[in-house]
Structure formats: structure tokens, C-alpha cells
Length: 139
Image (cartoon, rainbow, N blue to C red):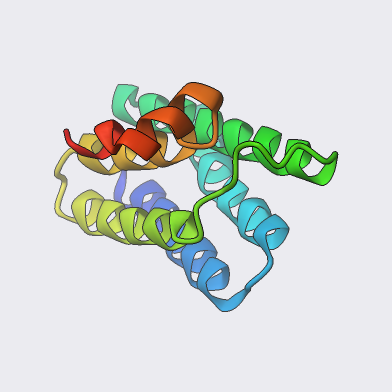
């Protein structure tokens, strides 16, 4: 990512804060709310310093958030067909922590984004089916 030192610092600090807060709560709605801060900071930084990798990260993180949110809302409405894996948020938190390390080292974050996206995809019908077959985790 080609960001100024100040923008990179803001990005890292916000991801670290959101991830730390996610780890402190047991409530799925709060975890999701805190996760939204990650794509939120990416979007704000893009408005000041455009970077294609950061834009890609924003899109992936926003889509992941929206997919997970849709599943949580469906469950609240009574749809119990597709559960959310108990370890999904801890895995997202780990991916975010790895993302921070790579951002600090100026390495690409595609593997971490892929992990987050696969986790969120497991909350969809086809993604859940693939997770049952473990096909989604074999790559």
C-alpha cells in the first residue's frame, strides 16, 4: 500500500483498536459493529489518499460485513438454516491482526482479505454448504 506515514498510522491504529474491542465482547452484534470500523477507516483514507490495494480491501471488508450482517438479521428473523460458525469472529480477528503486520511491513494483504471473505461467504447458502464439505477451507 502506498500511503503516507500518517495515513498508514491511522489505518493501523484503527484496525488494532477495532480488533482489540472485538475480542473483548461476546456479543455478535457488537463484534459486527466494531468490524465495520475497519472498512470505515479504509473508506475515509481513500478519500484523502487513493490507493488501489486499500480500495480493494475496503470493497472486500464491506462485502464481508454486509454478508455477515445479512445472516445475523436472518437468524434474528427466525431463519436458523444457516448458522454462524462459533469461531468465525475469532478467525476474522486473527486475519485482521495479520493484516496489520503486513501493512506495517508494506506487504500485500490479499491472503488476509481472502480469509475474511471466505469466512463471510460461509454465512451464505452456498458458502455454508461448501463449509460443510470443507471445500471452502482447502485452498
